[in-house]
Image (tube, rainbow, N blue to C red; front, side):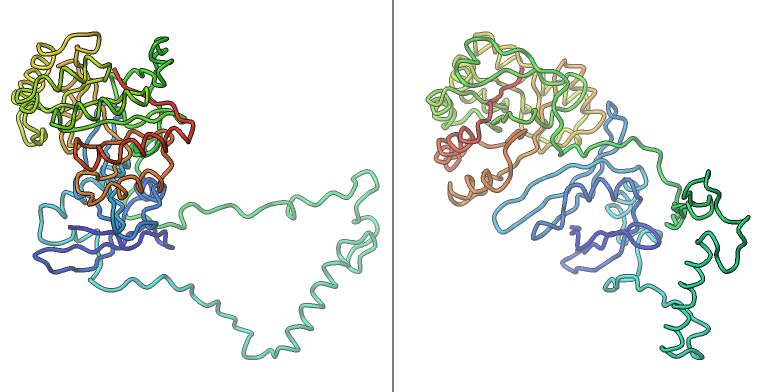
Length: 420
C-alpha cells in the first residue's frame, strides 16, 4: 500500500513524499517525479482529503496514446477514485515499486522526514565593515546619483548627452530590458517528456458527441447521449448528470426502475451475466421500461487478468443473453463497463472487436459499503454533481436513498442522461 503524504515543487525538481507499507511496516520515502505527472496530480487537489492512496498500477490507453494512473481521496466515510495522465517514467517507477521489495534507487531518498529546502543566505562581503548607519547613507547617495543621472542636466552628463526634445521621455533599451526566466533552474535527472497537455481522465470532459433527444424522453426529463466509440466515456457535459447502477439485476432492480419512473427520469444499468441468467425477468423489466442497459462481464472478474479469448466470450455471452430475454429499442447492448474499472490496451481492443463502447465514471459514493442512506446522500452534497457519472450498486440502502438523491439533483436544475 502506498499513501501520499505531500507533493511539491522544489528548487531542484518535483517530488512527492509517500508512505509505503509492506508486511504492516510503514516507511517514508521521497519520490522524484517528472513535471508532467506532477501537474496532472496537482490538478486533482489530492491533499484536500484526509488520506490519499496512490495506485501502484498505470494503464496504457492506445486511443489517447498515453499512460494513466489513479488515486483515491478518502475521508471518514467515502472514497473517491480519480484518474490522471502520467509519463512513461512514472509508470516505470510504479512497476518497480510494485514488483520489488524496495523503492527504486533513483526515485527515493533515505527513509526520513522531508525538510523543506532552505534558501542559502546571501554572502555580503562588505557586511562586517559597514554599520547600519553607513549602509543607509550609501543607499541615499546611490539614489541621489541615480536621480541626477536621469535629469537633462545631470551631474555626470552634459547637455548633448541628455535626451533630445524629439526623443520624448523614452527609457533606454538597457533600462527596459527585463531579466529572462531561466527554465533550466530546475535541474532534472531525466529530460522533460514531450507529452500533450491533457486533463486527467477523472476530470470533467464532455463526450465527443451528443444525440438530440427524442421528444418523449425530453418530456420525461432525461436525454439520451451517445457514448464515445473511440475513447472511454468518463463524464457528461456540464449541466448534465447520469446515474448508473452496477452488478445487477437483483431483487432491487424493479424497485429502482419504479423509483426512476416515478420521477420521470431514467438511468443506465450495467448487468452481470450470471445475475441475468438467475433473474432474466428483472433485466427485461429494466429494458422494457426505457432504461439503458449495458454489459458488466459474465462473472465480474478482472479482465486485465484474463485472456483476450476469455474476455471476448464473456462480453458476447452477456450481450446474447440480455438481447434474448428483453424486447424493445434498448435491447441491443453496446455499452461495456469493465469490472473494478480495470482496463488496458488488450481489454480495450477486445471491447472494440465486440463493437462495445466503454462507459466509466467520475463520481463514486461507495454506496456498497455505506452504513446508512444518509452517508450515500452526503456524498452527493459534498461534490458538485454537474458533469458527473455516478457509479452506484443495487443495494438496499441505495434504494432507500434514491428518492432524496433524485430530488437533490433536480434542485440543481440538472438534466438527467442515459447512454447508448
